[in-house]
Amino acid sequence: MQLLKAANVELKSVRLDKYYSESAYMDYFDKETKVYVIPKKNATLNGSQKWKDTMKEFVQNTMNYLE
Image (cartoon, rainbow, N blue to C red; front, side, top):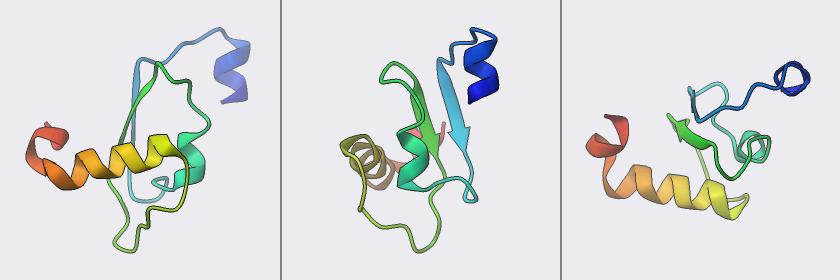
């Protein structure tokens, strides 16, 4: 993330697989960056509101979310 900021790279979206799908990683990105996650099997709702909203979107409409 520091390298991206130093190079003035702005992300529109990012996909995090199960190895990086924790609530702490959501806080590294700006509000404008759309973060897609493939949650771990034991993922919880502990974390920021952005994490909770992402998990809600994943659970409620998984197929559309993954497209």
